[in-house]
Structure formats: structure tokens, C-alpha cells
Image (cartoon, rainbow, N blue to C red; front, side):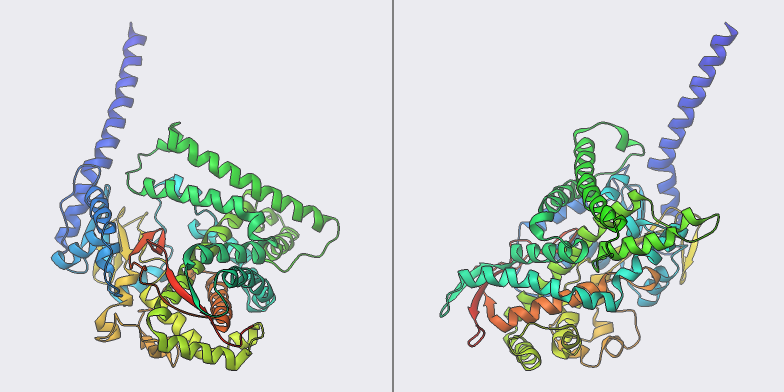
Length: 521
């Protein structure tokens, strides 16, 4: 009898402990955080049990997606309608609720600089482990593991290595141009939705430059990533319950099944390359070859900790998956918004074409020439300012409450760094902040920003995107070759509807009217 009572007591203790933890997670802790924020004079909505503001956020976003807007670069209220309404009501440094986690909106450049720079205190958010299956690798690591991976991956993005990848960029662009030339007559014009072609182009580039293969060979990986992205978007709309990833729900099984297929495909690519290197072949000058060579050299270091210097095979797979996802998403969105804006601003399209033809004629662009394209660079920077691939970033205080300027960010709170808001802030860019004016970058980024952290499309600080030079070089190459052969304008059927699908994309595609440039054959 005594043993039974002890057992019952233990069970009750376990149950009460879990009830307390759940109650603390879904109510007591969020209300405590809310009290701490209000005490500092910040404003925001009152916490709602478990879901916070998520239900209202996604309702408003869904309504906004149903309504296209006139052509304007002032689209903040369409992509982030709830936050836009919130900021107008409570001020810039308000908070919203991501489930039971408060997210403090930060818009001051100096505070953003601090949050990006103090990476040990403001770390990446970890709200749903399943989302990490879509974007694994370097982007999600912290501490020593991040430092190790950054060091190993970095050589793959050095400028001298990037220079060797330019011919692969050219091959990919040529394939797209050849397809367009079959649609567009030698005299006359044709309407083309360029968005799917640009997605295929950037996918082909990353396949060739990263893995020495073509888009067709890597096509299955991209199809699976697209499917995984759609599931991830649904996951963003719900609160993650700790441990839920182990429950065999339909979504969980599908996410893991897709991840397993991608891992198997990447394992085949890596093993094939590994066998070639073991047989004495020199490492190729693509991203995978450079990464494997860098990792091999690290593993040869003598010492008791040599195993810590190299990546595991799983780490290698994760970095390759990150190459595929980030490399394709960032550049395709940059290219599509560039073509859309140059369709709207024909004067800048003409200036860019004249610069490209003066530099290369009808020859394929080379690395050195691309680096001397001043007008093209100005245009790309202005597009990145008005249409950044990612409209906001976030960091989380995991360990202890931390000062950020005059704010005391409680442990367990997020800070949301509003990239789009800062990029179009009239106080930082002038009254014409929402207008397309590439001339603001005529003397470079530092002069345009006047020393402020007001332009950070690839992030900032130690964790700035390692592939930014890759993305910009690819965009310059693609844009130059397109301008050599085509002029383009907005089609009457073009519908302006910027929307976020992880990255900022044109919801209804990019329907442009293309015409061949005379003498480009």
C-alpha cells in the first residue's frame, strides 16, 4: 500500500510539474514579459492565450493578398499589414505577439547595428525546429559551431573563386535567353512572364556554380525545396508546442519525408565528388569542391581536437542544402524586381544598356568588366533598398535580459529588425525615400547612407550574408546579358502585388513585353 501511495505521489508530482510548465509557458511568463515591457513605456497589444497576435496577423495578410495595388514602392501595408497598423497606433518601438513570445519592433539604425553586432547576446530565433529543416546549416548556428562553419565555408566565396564561376553564370543566362529568343520574333514583341524563367535561371546558376551540375540534374532538389517551403509557410501560421515535432502528424511526416529525399540526393552528389577526390582528382572550383577541399585540409590538422575542426558528413549536407535554397531565392527575387523597375523606368533601362554595350559590346561579360559597371551597380543597390529579398529579420534574447540602447529586452523576448521600414524611412533617405532613384548610390553605399545603418539587404555585422557577392555578381551578369539582347516594358496585364513567400516576390508573376535589341544577334 505504501509503495502504491509513493507511486501515485510521484505521478501526481510529474503531472503537476508539467501543468505548471505549460501554464507558465502559455500564460504566466508571457504576462510577466508584457508587464516588463509596459513598465519601460513601450506599447503593444495585450497577450491573448497561446496564439498572441498570430491569428489577426495572418487574417490581415490574407485579406491584403486578395487586393493588388497600383504601381507604387510604398507596399509596406500590403506585406506586413498588422505591423503597419500596429506601428501607426503605438509607435515604432511597439511589440507584437508571435504566439507566447513578444517581438519588439526596432527601427532605429543604431539599435539595429547593436543587435546585429552583439551576436552572442542577440541570437537567431528558435521557435520551431521543423522550420530548421528548410534552412539548415550556417545560418542557424551559434557560438563555436557557427565560427567553425563560417571559417570553412568562407573560402568558397572569395572573389578569386567567384571569378572562376562567372563562365558558369553565363552558360545559365544563355539558356534562358535562347528560350526567350524562340518566343520573341526578330521584329515585333512578345509578352512573357519572366518570373518562372528567372527562378529557373538562379536555380541553374546555383546548380552549376555550387555543384558543377545543371538545373535539370538538380531539378528534383528544387521541386522538393519548393514543396518544403509551402509546408513551412503553414507552420509559420501556428504556434509550435515543444515536442510536437515527434508526433507523427501528416505535416510532420511529410516534412521529414521530403527532408530525407533531399538528403539522399545531396548525399549522392557529395559521395560522387568524394570518391573522385580520393581517386586523386583535383578539387573542382565550384562551391562544393572548395568546401570539401577546405574541410579536408581542416581534418588533416594535427592535434587532439582535429575532429572539431572539420565538418561532419551531415554538416556538409546541411550546408549544401543551404546553398541550394538561399542561392536560388535571393538572386531570383533581385532579378525580377530589377526587371520590373527598369520596365517602369525606361530612362534607367536605356542608361544601363548603353553602359553594358560600351563595356562589352555583344560579347559575353567578364568578371573585371562587371566590376566596372557603375550604373548597373547603382540600379541593383536601389532595387535592394526598395525591394529587399527579406523584409525583416529577428533576433532573440535566450539567456538573460539585455540592454539595447535604452531598452531592457527581457529574456525570452524577440527583437524584430524592420529592414523594409528602415530602407524607406524618409528621415534617413529624404522625402523621396519611396521613389526609384539609383543616383543616390552614385558615390557608393557609404556616401548614400551617410554612415547610418540604413541599408542592410544582406544583414549586418559578423553574420552578414556570406553569399552577397555571389548574388550581386550573378545579378550583374544576368542583367547585362539580358540588356544586350532585349528591351522590356510592363505589360498591360502586369499586376503589382508584392508579397512575402519567405522572400519578397511578385504574387502574380512579372508579365513584361520583350523586344529584341537591334544588332544584338
